[in-house]
Length: 297
Image (cartoon, rainbow, N blue to C red; front, side, top):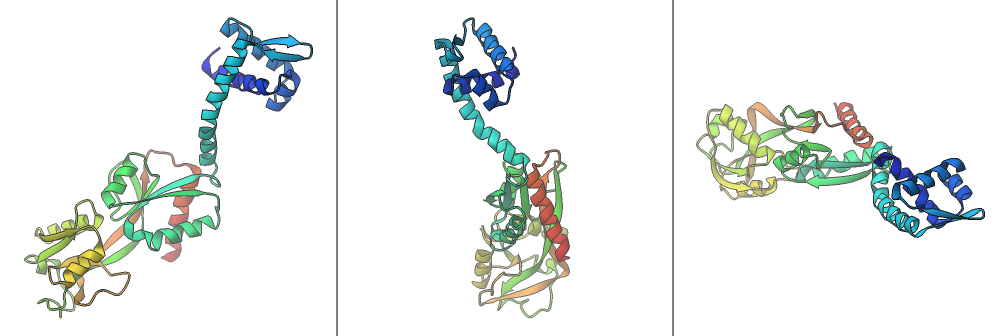
């Protein structure tokens, strides 16, 4: 008797411990009575001692049978939550989606996506993980999250991604800056400026470094931060310039936003592992996000 054959027999023994009546147990587990009787005999043969003794129409567990039934109860109790989790993952109406995303997307983008999805799939649960871009991508690589919404989307061969939307990037300078009255600026006009940047690991830092490199210079770092509005405040204080998206709310006094020429954007993409099959609920949410993007185009 191999391990795959043992599990259902232990389930029968567990049921028999609660009701020492073979006919009723057979009905409760959906098996013919002769099959249940045969399985009990096979368990006894494997142990080298009977697991039940007959008393008229009923049976009683022997000491060996009682010990085995108690072990089966403990084992099956530990297994049942995992089985429920698997069932939920296989059912898109009851599964769980673990989504990683940038902090700024928690204000409106992600809540709107989740709200729209749950109107059609109200029982799907979500795990929401917010962090810097590289930390989110690392979690996706390790399989700790199902989907990542980051900018820029990861480009490695292990990933698949789809751009959902773009944000225009502008140069933010203090109001008294020498370029503040320009209608637009080229990035190379900033080669000698002090930059206020996000720390390494943030997507906007990568984009800024890449754009400056394409313009032929490495930005001089005056300050590094972890949040775009802090960067904007440091610019307002006259401590440097920055490359940022338009603010979600009114910018602080003391800054000017200047369009870049040529125009530059950062792309937000939804990414997943290429060779990692997505559970149905995750696949349904991914498809919802892609449809939502197409509807807004």
